Image (cartoon, rainbow, N blue to C red; front, side):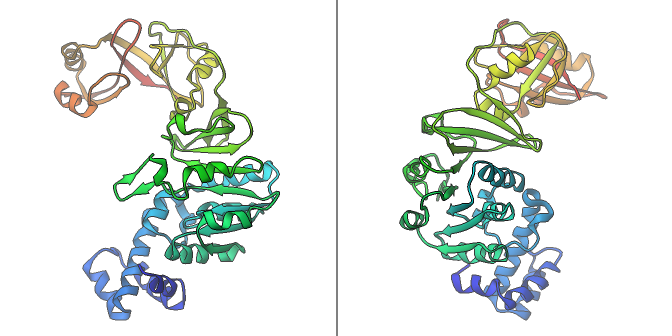
Length: 384
């Protein structure tokens, strides 16, 4: 979509095209394209149909809040989930910010949450088309959107007492990247904004630990069980923690090493955010649990240990990891529905499932993992 089409899309002409596009059962069909082109020119018809397709896709991330948001494919992929945007906005308020500059706002998901929380927000977006769409999303909330290079305007906008948020683009023509020289705005620029002000930089959850500056608090966020991002906050410290949303439970990684021992009667699989934050040993201390292996995130206990920071299982059976042994167990127990979980073992669960030839009326979950007793298979049942 070019700039002229984007400007038409967010205006009255675009509203009519979007209404017609939204009435089509399948916006990607030839029938839908024909109907739109009979009423509008090809560029606007394509833009409206594309927008409706994106909005329907966005329901998974935004739910009913997608409403009439204007989207781009990249903007939708990079946008924070509403539950995370709301948490971040509240963090800015709790840390004393009143005005925040969003550098590289994309479609404006975080800027919207901040504005709704009562913060004064100025949003900056480099791409002219995205800036037009972000302006349409944010103007009803009184947010100014500037189409500019963040590196060129940050100095003027970030006066004393002004907070900053940045979610640098991490995509190239080959996909996502952790090559910091490909970030936009650049990595050194965005992390350099944090000292001396209330600030947050958002990165993907797989951020290499070596890239984390020494003087920031890093929070890995799990939204409904999916680890979705790493938020770096200005602090002067180097705390690392896991945050679970909804609910807001936080587990900080503390010094200490968990004991290692044989599988007990119960297994705990820590939330992915707990693992990324390096808080597995902290969780083990809370639960009086031990690791199965020093390098593996599974924890085990002899008594039930429910926790919001992981999934608990009862161990029903165990056996050495030998494919022939496991195949015989599956056959003898008439297992037709088989879930396979694994850590630290070089197998593909889907391929293994086929080789085990499950057949029968029963279901089972197998966990294949290293342990102090060697490679082990645990037959488990999820606990409420």
